[in-house]
Image (tube, rainbow, N blue to C red; front, side):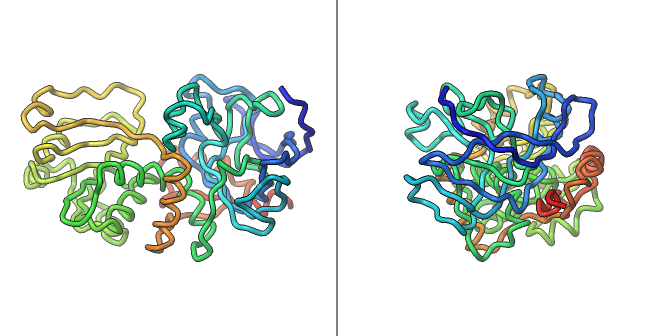
Length: 354
């Protein structure tokens, strides 16, 4: 390990699974030749932040500073940096490094890095030891190759969730070549689903949204849905049998996958981006009878994440957000557990200085 200098940085994190998030000081490395230092302006709150803070995936090392939806402004660059200059708008998503040598990294699929990429928070920090700390902080230092350019025409607060929710939905829609002439289903209208609706619509698809909440019908249409189906209504579901080319499933709870597989045309695919903790049973005939695929998808690589940001700028897409102060994080987590947000919380990080 190289002995990189560090400096104290204000952050918000927690020391234990059952402790609230609170102000703390962390160490960030000082800028090395290929690094970009970013003053964090906005940090989105992702459901995985909450899972990690509460150690629900049983891999958290404390103290933890969550946050991997980061938008800010460059305040310093290393002397070998070529992609950014001081004053540029910049963003950081779910990862801050990878091995760069495996086949996946060479193909721009750093999200599938063979030895494992370095996540923005709660990963081993290869520069200064300990763990990486995320975006609930005043600044971050990241290698320029893992930093994104933020198009000037996007609302910065609304852009933050694009770094996780945006790329998590864009990547499968792009991979399965969603476009004009296709009927695409989006299951669930939450942090992920609301982005899936906007992006699929911008790609030119006919978008059918499936929800268990009749009250979300108008909102789904406002977001760009062409049709809204109440998934608990068997008659409504039957009307869409064998009609969809692709389904993006954004639900993170136990639900009936067969009911959706049976809505796919021959050779249709259902891609899961929600992450239920329980296994999801599937009947073999739901797949066999239509040569259908049941797949999953992760975030995108760095190049694809940049492509997503540029696509969103072109189509004026940002997340629907509720802006909060840093001292409202614990309340936001409580509301997130109840699904009481439309559709993403974003922290105004200027409030960490007060």
